[in-house]
Image 1 (cartoon, one colour):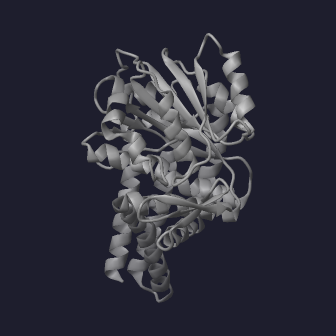
Image 2 (cartoon, rainbow, N blue to C red):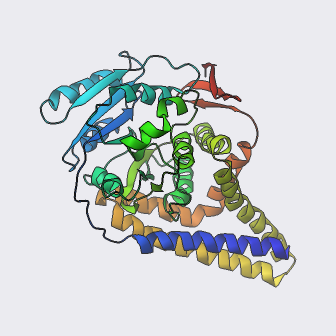
Amino acid sequence: MTWLLLAWMITDGVATYGVWHFWRSYVPLEPAQESPPVAVLVAIKGTSAGTARFLDSLCSQDYPHYRIVFALESTADPAWPVVTAARDALAGRIAIDLVSAGRAAGRTQKVHNLREALQALREADRIVVFADADTFLPPAWLTDLVRPIARGEVEASTGYRWPLPQDGGLATLVGAAADLSMTTSARSRHWNVCWGGSCAVLRAALDAIGLPAVWEHAASDDVTLSHALRSHGFTINSPLRSLVPSPVSHSWPGLFAFARRQHLMLRTYAPGHWLLGGWILCIPAVGAAAALVGLLRGVLPAALCLATSVVLLQVRGSLRQRIAAAILPPGDLRTARATLRFASLAWPAVHAVHCAAFLCSCVGQSFTWAGVRYRIDAHGTSICGSA
């Protein structure tokens, strides 16, 4: 039991240091001297209550030279007339292209849509940005995201989401709280992974890795992109100011399906990151269970470990409160603080659910995404049929 408790304390300590490192590293940075032309690629399916806010935020960036390419499965998608109206309203101010990608075969629909959108790139596009339609983008998002690339420091730059619950359901709160562990983790060019909801890549780097071929049989857009970039010796930065508010709403089945899919993508395309995630999730869970047993038996070290873990949890929560206050707009900050309060009280249950989703990713190759059933095989992905 001693070694298990020690591993738990080390894991909790490293996790707390990671959040502190994030907060410490959140400092003003020098702006880029240039603003290279940017093409923003968005794969979108259907509409939601947040679609209008997303479009408004995307089209209100303070970056001087960017255009947008929306990629949809077909013109029958409910989002097609919405983005068409946005294109017409912004004519003469922001160039917007629409791509009808068609039905995917041998890869997920999102990957297929983005792969087709690559054909709409123009010679002048020096930086390619990928964004998800379930985000709310601050006015400086694009400027902050492309800054390290525009300064010539790296070839790729990525942000991450700050989950904002859109209802008071327990599954939604648990999912948002669980995601915060990734939102505020330490960033490093040695292990950063691109997140498809907010990612920028130098056009020359995309050409060098041959992205259409990378995505030929891909289930994941971002993890496969990350692997290809690293394989070619390119560096991925993660600007701390590129955290974007992201509305979330989960049912219990939907939460488990989403969380398992994320871990399954890592298991398939980034096994090292998957194993690290397993350690971070499973060691504290097993360690806490062992400590509870030890506490019932009157073992003093077990009680000390439980007390230390609770203190470290509160320290992480306090640091995340500060990070949220520095990054999020006032309206979203209220929602974020409510989530953080919930996490501080319900963290054992949140961690247990997250750990269970990871364990479910250890077996099986099939998953459901946006109503379509997929199976990852030795060559990539194949569509199994509608879910």
